[in-house]
Length: 474
Image 1 (cartoon, rainbow, N blue to C red):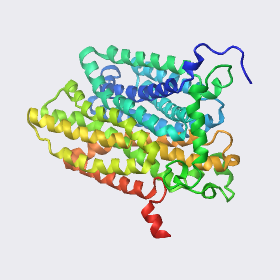
Image 2: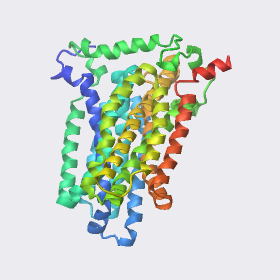
Image 3: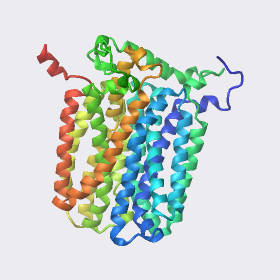
Image 4: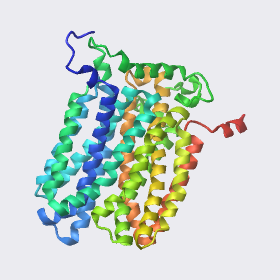
């Protein structure tokens, strides 16, 4: 069905670049506002709510837990609802409304109950933006182009996750609450305009407009996706050459699985390991977030502003290497990037014990080692979501009667949101506990051991069984 009068700037608003940018800004806003508020929570509790000093840590932990709990609990229903809606824009906007309400309550709230409600709303918004945003991204670029899109976005949003806590602390110290929340409101305004203007490609196709050039990427990608189901040892797309019959659901799943079909996909170990990769990625990011400022203060006596600058060596390789790694994932599959990325992190993390207290030379050494870790982060940014999308698309294309018209993608990204939130929560807790008990160097050794385990599991499961093991099993 065609509509005679298309919306203004239809081609731009439905373009792949604009949609990717909108999803990127949405994810950036979520992580940036989360990190911006965290450093000033203790001051809000003490100055505005009059919490006794002895209880500030416990209340701060409770507020952090409220965010994580709300995100985990909201993600599954957000995914289920999104998969049943014909368009993603409305829930995407509603998620931002929840974040705006949370920001206003954190800015003006005078009681602990209001602050807890605000953090719950932040968690709800996070669940919606990650679930809907990633599903919208897949709708736009297709599984075969998802790697480079995710690599580009994750390199960008890492700035929000890593640098916002330091920026929040600096702004509060120099200019007070008003400066902190002014940035928050400005970013929310930009995010709202972009989400409001977006037109999904499937909606744009209903209008009489010349969209062929822009939609060709998605459409040709779908054709490639269909062709990729032919067994091909060199093709990293759906199933990595896996036969169609192996994706076919032959048994009759119980009713409770039919109501939540993503549960059947989770029986595939490839999907489980893909989620483990996401969990470890988030754990690494939040570990650096929690420990770089404190270690910089301990070793070099840095104030919050100088400590914030130390994130540059971590973020720059991520920004540059993320899109490159994403292209390689699209070309060769998720296995090489995940295996090599986590393996790279093992020595890079261990090397963080080398810098000692001192002057310029020690600061340079610290920056170099931090930059090496940024290279590893760039490699592991996209394999999880790309692999998970491959698995779900393999099942969906061969069992459309089971999964319905839209597939289980929003449910998949809801699970990814839950796992990523869990990693962001665990990272600071694990890092803080280990750093206090066994020291910074040994803490990084433990995290390095975790990366090694994930690297091995990625080799065994991502993209299917390794060629070497397949040959031995013949």
